[in-house]
Image (cartoon, rainbow over all chains, first blue to last red):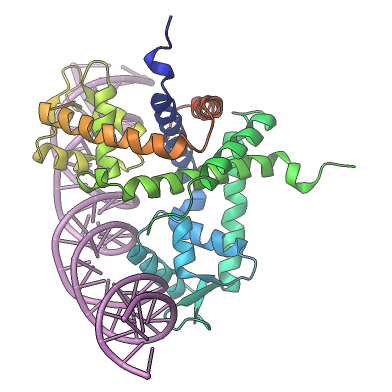
Length: 155
Length: 155
DNA sequence: CCAAATTAGATGCATTTGCATCTATTGTGT
DNA sequence: ACACAATAGATGCAAATGCATCTAATTTGG
């Protein structure tokens, strides 16, 4: 008997994506219900998190935009809000007069760590019971591989 | 030698989630750049898609809300817009005077199929070259398992 | 070297979103 | 049966988002 429709390559890819996306929605729902997100919206936390991971401490606005699912203008205003709240600070980019560099303030770093701890606890409580450690590693490997294969993201 | 910090269960889970989330963001970026999303935003398409998958054809508004990453009020208004565009139609729920049932119109079904085809092509072009068929299957298994372990979602 | 094209980021404005709240209906305990 | 809580969905309103556009700086092609 020939391979059924459900084994076609196109369908396989679509179903993998669909499942990945739904899992993301479901986990995000759970996370957003926690108290951590009362203080900072997801995208706002995401910016603080990305900045906290940056080796030099400084990041260009357009580099940030690759990590976050936001338009350029929305990110611009999000950062403006974060700056008003004293969580990040700006600096004109030294090598490029158009650019802006961002850095966490002490207060921003503090808040990121605080929310990050809660966050990691919540995630652990959600993912830990769902998948074995080996499965978690494999999931990470596959999603890393997927992301790395995508190449540069469109602006 | 004792297990390093990078093997702690908590960290493992956090890294798996982080990777899953970033992959989702990256793929979504690519998808949204395509022409399919000019006609309908992601969440709007998602509602049409979910309705198209519903066996009976009718779905309660609150059931829909489990699939979509939107607040109740936003979904209410999103559906209102879809109705105005003639893509879905409403009906009071027969068994529950508070409820509303939704169904695709012919036009809605048509648009869903049209966008869906583009969509599936795009996904296939992104995921296909990134992961082997076996990896795609495994990714799907893991994300399905994750989602199924989460239990009922908060409202 | 200079004009044209490109890029980074900001801003006006309309649309979308979420929070709080409201109405209507259903479920529950006594 | 009846008061009270819980649930489904709608709505006012402020905040967030995206599109189109703008300014300024850089890069490119001749």
